[in-house]
Length: 109
Image 1 (cartoon, rainbow, N blue to C red):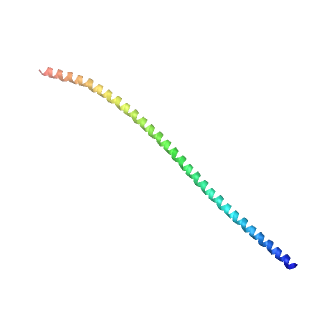
Image 2: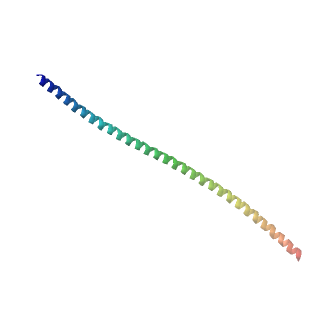
Image 3: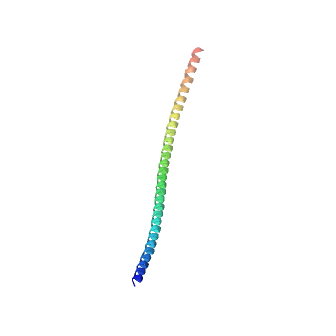
């Protein structure tokens, strides 16, 4: 009877060990699953952040290009205005120069 009782206890111990091993295997599998999910989520977060940074940089670059184009156009308009003023002044001076040369020429005759 004692032997049967010891055999029963050993059987219970073996069953408990098997259950423990099963629980450990499930826990280990769950641990790996959680780690893989965390890695995947981290990589996605990093990727999303990089994309957001790139979009921000592209927006800033586009704004700077637009500002540069605006300044360029403004400077071109100012230059054109200056050219027109100088041209008008030169044309006015040409008339004065012709009159001056004519007077000098007439004075020599």
